[in-house]
Length: 485
Image 1 (cartoon, helix red, strand yellow):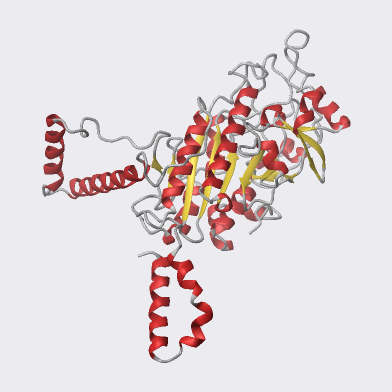
Image 2: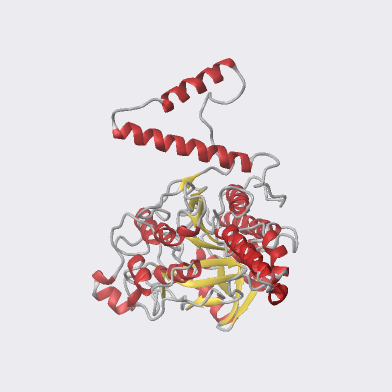
């Protein structure tokens, strides 16, 4: 029984007792609570995190660009000049006039977002730039895996202070997922879910749901991601339909599941299979055409990230509906978009360039924001990005290579947006916080961002946060302040 149902029944029981005792008058101001309690259609206090992973290492320093002339000039020089297909094909800088329509401001100065972040279809589906200006999108500048704060001198003199295997795709992705700099089997998302899942009604469905495939991020001690595709759930092959053959197969399978087995391993396998089938039947009914999980928001087509986020929106809708047998109060989702490992064609104007990737991300997140508005969940869902690293400021001739400190985005109605968090770096090559090719030493750690999100989800114990993020105590703050509550 859900906590909300229990509360309603307790309230009505107390009201009946008060009536018998002649004390109804004292409760008259509370009678309006009955209608609001009975009208509750969504799980109260629901919260969800949505991780959007950019696989390959996003060229973040073309997503967030300094716009004031002096810092823009440094940016352009470090990026080997403004890209021009004819006169400077190796340049990686965006021409300053092209940034005029995506300017944003912050107390630290004037910036612009990538030109591809404009609105898809006006206010109904805002791009990243409009979401920033509306105060719904925050940016974290120069963030990355860190053991502790580290200066350039310490980087050069003490290699043990560097996170292991810098510039390696698989290793750095793992560090983002686990929220620490030593080998570990569990991810920080899964560990957060371990602690906050107790309020979920249907414990058969994992609080961690992946539309982007297997991942370490959502693995906890008692939590493992439930995997789906952007088109929903896949049933057992040959088991559906009304054909005689399908019916025979279903009957044979049921006989196998009804049988008794001497081995505890066989019994456990049967139990797991039965639970999986029951969960499939439940979710499939909610996601079917006309089911509770339908949303009407127009998502862009031929956009894999948009397809995944649409399924997230549908799952959120049915998961928090009090008439459906999921009723989760805490969930963590994972989606993924690839193509960011751009050693070549980074500035291409075609569908294989960075500009098109940013366009797809901006449009997908704008549609997701609109869908959350449709279902009334904008304040209850916080979306954030991760990528293994940014890319070098300097060119390799046709693209850029693996770097370190990057830019992350945080989107949500409970986000204190329209601001940059962290410290925007001096973009001089081999400068105070950069190496020879513009690989920035991060000023903000993954742990700080992740701990801020974990707090919002309800993990507030210093001990719990320290267990999930063992390096957190090395930093001056465990809360970056980008969440309003």
